[in-house]
Length: 242
Ligand SMILES: Nc1ncnc2c1ncn2[C@@H]1O[C@H](COP(=O)(O)OP(=O)(O)OP(=O)(O)O)[C@@H](O)[C@H]1O
Image (cartoon, rainbow, N blue to C red):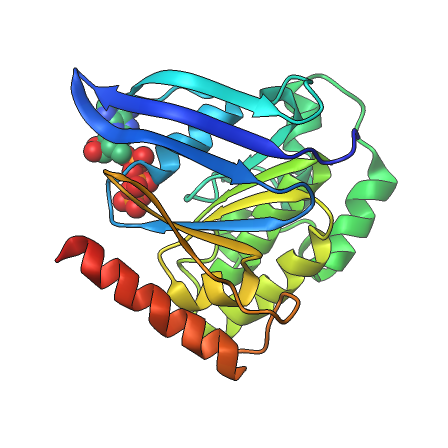
């Protein structure tokens, strides 16, 4: 794996000639978590998919650049909103899906370590339908980590989880992805306040930064500054739709 780079996406996007988002520059710091919030349909998933080099419905004018000058898309692991697990495959097979699709040998040791880290060792042979929502999310996160990429894009990865499982998953993800360049799209101000080392709110007009708390992430859910950031973010988001 190459060292995680800084990443910048700058440009504008439109759909069928109508602007989706105005010219913006989103800079991700190497080895840090950047959280991106914003109203529904403002283009957050589009930004992730552009960085990942995946198809979008938008025409994008601009550039996506890594600080080391190396190609970006091939160094990205992308965890989509939906966990996208194959229903007929076991947990172990789903975690190793990327290697299998590429016809590569599966690194069994690495897979076993990740499955243990996600506390899934008792579920290795189960199919997704036999798992809870939180367990499925952990499989999807293990699969994302199995790719061992320096740039990680997470699209509302914990949105379907109950509050306790969500907090557990945030802790797990923060620990497991330490040192990677992470972009997390979330609708949850509390999540951004816990995890973000940089926090941005996206609107059709561009990006508004929000000062993250000073404590290292993941922050305690009842940390005062974290709660203040959560409140400030909620206020920003409400102003954006007003
Ligand atoms: N494949 C596509 N073809 C055409 N339009 C699309 C396509 N994918 C998304 N769009 C449109 O692009 C706009 C931005 O979508 P996007 O999914 O990026 O928004 P978002 O901010 O992630 O929304 P949400 O928070 O609801 O997930 C929306 O209006 C959506 O309908």
